[in-house]
Length: 149
Image (cartoon, rainbow, N blue to C red):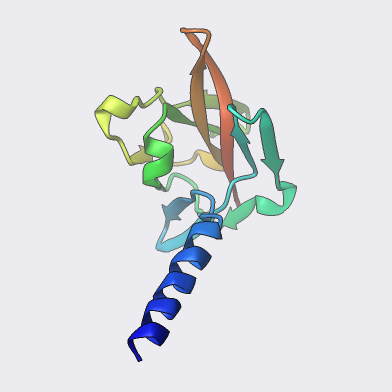
């Protein structure tokens, strides 16, 4: 019995080691609803490889002027990251904006996206994971996108 148990544990450990961990995710929460996004693009700089999934765009119904909570996984928060977003102001003009860049030292796992006026309508929000290259340049290595419906 002990040999069977040891073999089963060894096989489970081997299976666990060979499994690829799931990609990091982002949760967008607004107006009583939440949606979890997988990466639209995720790059491994060391391997010089990017995986792209154009179907990773998620939708969330958001009424004008509503706050959007953005929550990122630990894997994202361990690198610089930020939120890009676009909205229509009360005159119908498109405005492109962004949060500040959150650094790993701040241990920031969430961001509250609040538009300037209650009549403003969010169009989309995108979390971007960044990497520092050449000492001072930021390179986008991941992106999670939510489109407001």
